[in-house]
Image (cartoon, rainbow, N blue to C red; front, top):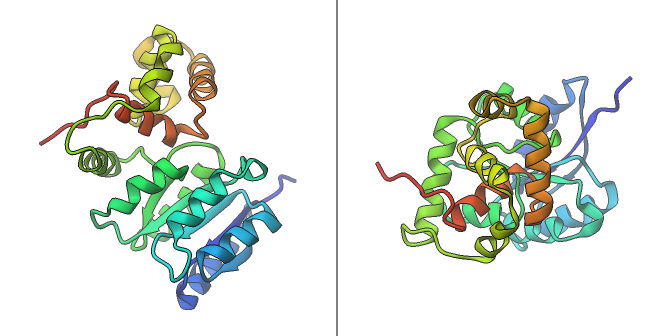
Length: 228
């Protein structure tokens, strides 16, 4: 039998944590291993339990979710841990900072239960929570706001020089929120070939997951945020 996906809940609202725990533990393939009331405790418990996924509230007293995410994602011992930020889905400058800090994506606290459960499974699989059109639009908006409406050259701009032409092409499609199957159809190659290109791009760019590839694609200027 496959081991369940382990989850750490980090939120300062005990009632909300309890509701999330009941929901997560109701699924046979998911299990809550710990609960944290603030960011410092989240980091401590992440190091103790090394969960597959951390559901992290952005705003918490003391050490907030952003600082905790940065600490978790910069710890080599926690390289396999994926962080999903919980937000109120407002236009929040902290969201893009969280993605840059290493978060795999974000989810609104008002999301449907099945969306929350799906987000945990997606993050555990190493995918980015950037596929829905609305979320992609928000990401583009956050990145545009965070750079004054223009992509700014950063470390990623230099690192892109190491990518092959096909890897750059795949990166553009990843930034568009396409799955490996969808990219394969666009490029007339197999999803396995796409996965190989994605993994090589991640290795060359030092990206933890697909969410980080999206951030690099925007910040390097390879992909420009669309303005409506």
